[in-house]
Image (cartoon, rainbow, N blue to C red; front, side):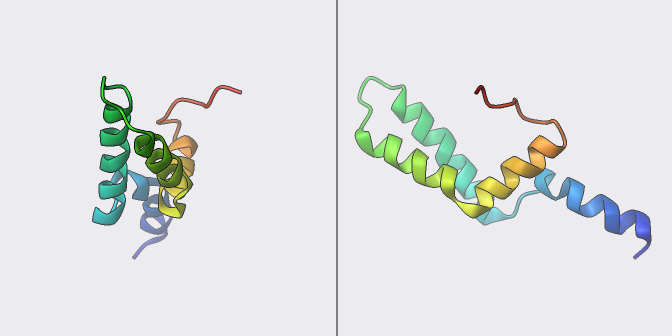
Length: 75
């Protein structure tokens, strides 16, 4: 593997997430949808909080932020 391939892969790893991370990201989407529905449950907020603390999700967010592909969090 050439140097170009080695430096490129970590930067684009977030663009091709593994299946477990895709499941977590999909869960975030579904829990947000539920949270905004008329019959939302406290569980949705708790699940979202836990998913957002997940190390895989946190790493993905950092990588996507490094590529400027997600909005910056308001402070």
